[in-house]
Image 1 (cartoon, helix red, strand yellow):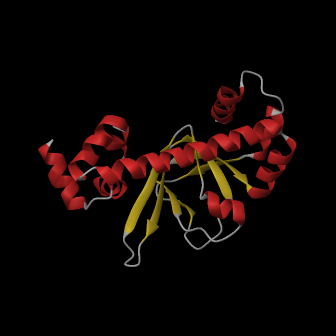
Image 2 (cartoon, one colour):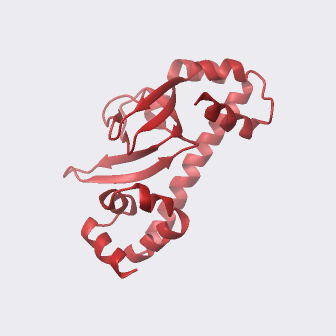
Length: 189
């Protein structure tokens, strides 16, 4: 599985990135089960995760303990509660596995050390930040302008693979609509 991480990094930095053999050992390989909690709201996020296989849900609870999904992150992507990870403050989001997953996790100390000693790793981190920001802004801007039916159509067009991997409840949470409304509208398509 380490080859998945190696390929991901080399695809971003070129065929023979310097110091790659110093970067890879800083990651811990983790196999998870379905619904395993990786980050809990109120606790400090200790890792940045690279998803080699599987799917993660990033979500929050409102004051009534209703769950709202901010993002679904799949293979060949990075996931973390970056504000908590970077600052050491309590996380404002939760992260859990949606399906059995294989992850590579790096803790804050190793992450900081790589940032300070390996210039190429800094480039990877900037790409993680930019992708996370762009994804969040795109999703917010897109969903604000769409009604519930248009959100379902958007998902079917731009992220159709999620339709077969996620439960209706999770899809509805991701789209920001009620589960019953989602089921009713999906039946019309």
